[in-house]
Amino acid sequence: MAFAIPLALAAAGCGSDVEEDPFADCEGRAYTATIVDPTDGATDVPTDVHVRIQWSGGIPDRYTSMLRVGGEFLSPESSGLDEGGDYDIYPFAPGHSYTFEVGWICVLDGGEKSKSYVLDSAAFTTAAP
Image (tube, rainbow, N blue to C red; front, side, top):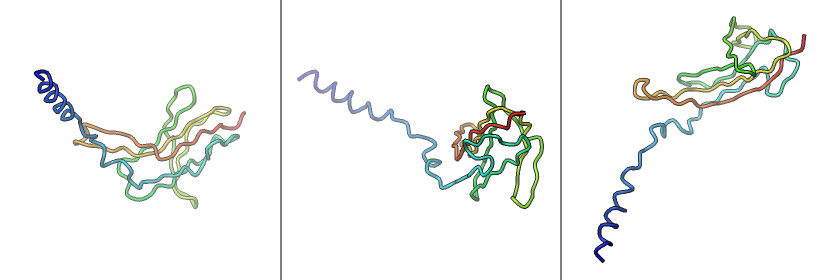
């Protein structure tokens, strides 16, 4: 019986060290983005394709990430607007595979903490030369 009290007290204190998820308020937000062009799984994509995304309204700190398979990140070389909406043009090489990802970043504590949320992604291959 002498051991039951200290064990009970020790067990009661274990649950108090649980930390709340600081990003709980970011989870499940109704933000959406759709990569319109190029589509996931596309092949023979022209190297001058207009990369297009449809974003839902009100997304804070949205991001895009274009990665050539093998590890090279690409930045758009130009952007524009036409009858299809806003677009970016990337310096794609012929006959290569790419992964494009779009999403948003939940920023907390004045930028001290952040977490990215992927909203859509597409893997595609450009046309061979």
